[in-house]
Amino acid sequence: MGLDKAKVAYDKALELNYGTVSLVNMSGLYINANAPLDAQRWAEKGLRLDPGNAQLLNHRSLALLEQGKWKEGFESYDSRFGIPAWSARKYADKAPMWKPG
Image (cartoon, rainbow, N blue to C red; front, top):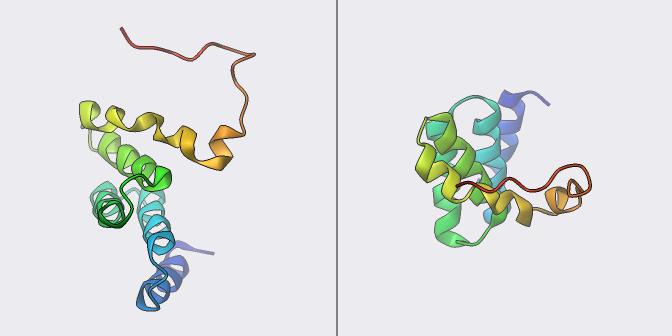
C-alpha cells in the first residue's frame, strides 16, 4: 500500500473514531514519509489521549530526532522497548545495552 492509499485509509479510520490506533498509524505514516513535523503533531495528539502509549512515544521520539532535537528525542527513545515487536528481540547475548555517560 502506497503512502497516499495509507493516508486515505487512516483518514477514514479517524473519521470512524478508531482512536489511538489510528493516531499511531498516522504518525507512523509521516515518519515513513520523512515528514517529522506532521509525525510529531499526530503523535502528540495521540499522547494527549494515551500518554503512556509506547508506539506514540517512539514515533514522537523519532520525529524529534529527525528534526535534530537530540535532547528531547532521546528522552523517550527507549519507549520502543515497550512495543511488543521490539521487546521480542534479543540483543543482550550479542552486545550489552549502551548506557550514556
